[in-house]
Length: 147
Image (cartoon, rainbow, N blue to C red; front, side, top):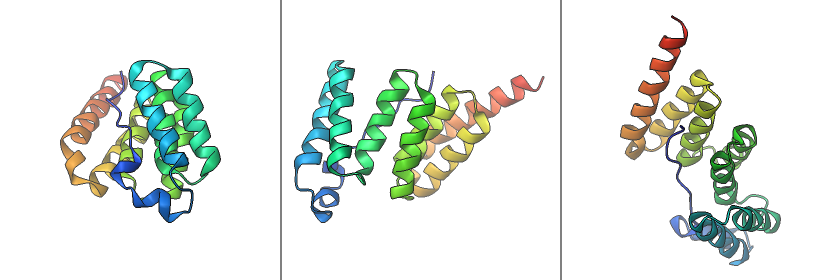
């Protein structure tokens, strides 16, 4: 089971949306998606994330959150693409690295997972405890698989 993923809200960085001139529409769709995700309406959440991305194709949080939803559905490969897109837009988005590491772990691609967990820790030291535990798990799986 992959690590607990973290959704991101525009309230974490409210200037990100307005700075790009997209107003509150993509922000509202993203946050609505988060609410729907947590209430179990995954189809509704997916629609909202897609709409947020349609309005603002550079909306990092919407890509991150859609990736989390895809991990929840077990679609790790598509999730990795969303996290990679978020990272392409913002290479300092530690949460997207952590979440992509979790998706790699879901695919049993432990070396890739370790790389992303390490990068998440470098970018955000508050992720050190969780990322270290994930790295330790992945290293133990690599060791077990090599025996």
